[in-house]
Image (tube, rainbow, N blue to C red; front, side, top):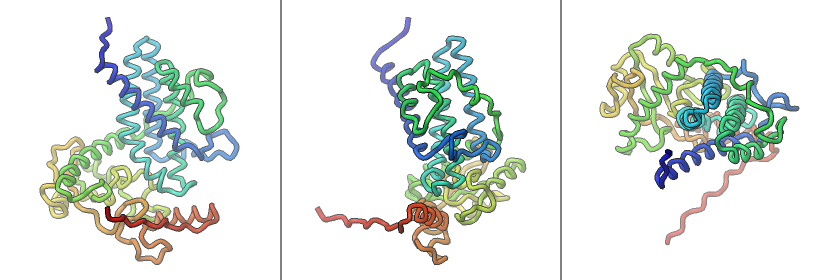
Length: 339
C-alpha cells in the first residue's frame, strides 16, 4: 500500500516546483550561448575550465551514474531523491547561487561568464535526460524550450547522455572544504544581520584562521586580488573565496589573534566549526559598487567614466558600449512623491 493525502501531495508539488524552477534558471541563462560543435561556438573547452566548473561537472557525472543505477534497479524513489538533493544542495544553494556574479556582472563574452554557461549547458541537458522517466512532460517542456539547436527533436531521442557521465571528480577536497567554510560564515552572518551590522552578505568582510597548515594553504590559494580588477592577477576570477563566499573581502590570516582584533568578539566563532576554521565577520571596507554591490576602497579614485562603480564594472560597461555602439546612460531615479 502507498499512503497519500493532502500533505504528501503538497510535499510532492513543492519538490516538483523546485525542479522546475531550477530548470527555468538554467534555460534563462543560455539565451546567447552556442554549444560546442556548432558554428561560432562560445563554449569553453574542458581543459580550460576553472577548478570550480570542473568540480561541478564531476558532481554531475556522479549524480547521473547514481540515477542510472537506481533506474535500472527500479528504485525510482532513490533516483528522484538524488536529483532533488543535487538540484537543491549542490546546484541551487551553491553553484548557481555563486554563478550570479559571473552571469550578471561580467561582460557578455568574458571568460568567467562563458565558462559558467558551458557548465550550465551540461547541467541542463543532463538534468532533462535524468528526470524524463519520472516527469516526462516537464522534461519535454524543457527540451522544446532549449534556446539553441539540438540533434534530437525530443528529450526521449538520442538515448542516455553518455558524454556527460565521463567527467571525473575534480578537487573534491578543496570544494568540500570551501562549502563547509561557506556554511560557517553564513552562520556568523546571521548574528551580524540580527544586530543590523550588515544586511546582505556583500556588506561584510570575513577573517578566517585554521590551524591545519594544509587547509590554510588551500584557502590562501583562493584569496584574490585586494581590489576588483580586470583581468584578475592572483586568481582566474572564479576560483576565489570572495565570489564563492559572496563577501566583499576575505582575509585568511596566520593567527587567531588577528581574527580577534579585527572583529567584534560576538561575531567570532569558536574553532569547533564544520570546517575547523575560526571565523570572524565585520563590516566591509570602502564604498558599495552601484552595479555589482561589492564594497571596494578604490571606487571613484581613478578617473574612470563611471565614478560610482568599481573598475571591473567600468570595464563591463565599456565592453557593452563598444558592442552595442551606444553610450550607457543611467536611467533617472524618480523621487517618491508624498502620499
